Amino acid sequence: MKKILVCDDENSLLNMLSIILKKEGYDVICAQNGKEIIEKLKENIPDLIVLDVMLPDVNGFDILKTISSKYKIPILMLTAKSDIIDKVLGLEFGADDYITKPFDTREFLARVKALLRRMEEVKKISTTFSYKELFVDFDQKVVKKSGNPLNLTPKEFELLKVLIEAKGTVLSRDELLDRVWGYDYCGDTRTVDIHILRLRKKIEDDVSNPVYILTVYGFGYKLGIK
Image (cartoon, rainbow, N blue to C red):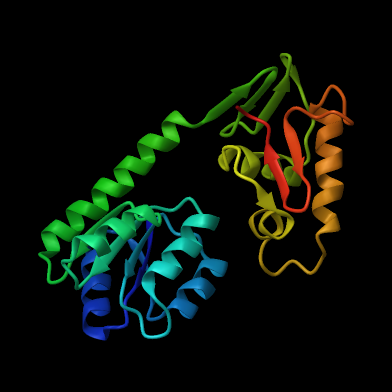
């Protein structure tokens, strides 16, 4: 069952969208403001987010940027504005699609299904990763170096996976803690450094001169792809 998080401060619209999505067989999570949607994301990672631009506590574009920088979740923006600038901003800040209020529920459902279908196609394509001598199969949770399997712990595998998904973007230690250990983790950023060192010992030829996991001093770590 696909999980959809819907955020809108208008109760009648929120209830209507919840009802029609549940009728289509989706599991629906509801939020009414920016703070609430961030809290919901700590508890559940949905397959799709439906996000209203006009929220009572924060600009929807700010929430959009926050979500798209931390999660790879398709986002359908709801907007009461027809201004092309708002639509362009939404797409530039990470939205995958938008729909302007008022809208036909059939069009809304069609867009939801199209986004979910697109993500399924992306997942099918992105089940493996290879770079230089490193090969990763995400489905089988297999990591090989020069054809030889590596014995990674679950946290080491997840850390490598997050770096790969970032596609060379620098991730801070705090971001890695959030994505790999979770928001409620009580440890400090040294945990990240320790796991990075252990991971390097397993995948790098020379730990002192890494080519797969690079340190960006003062910022964090990134995957060393070109």
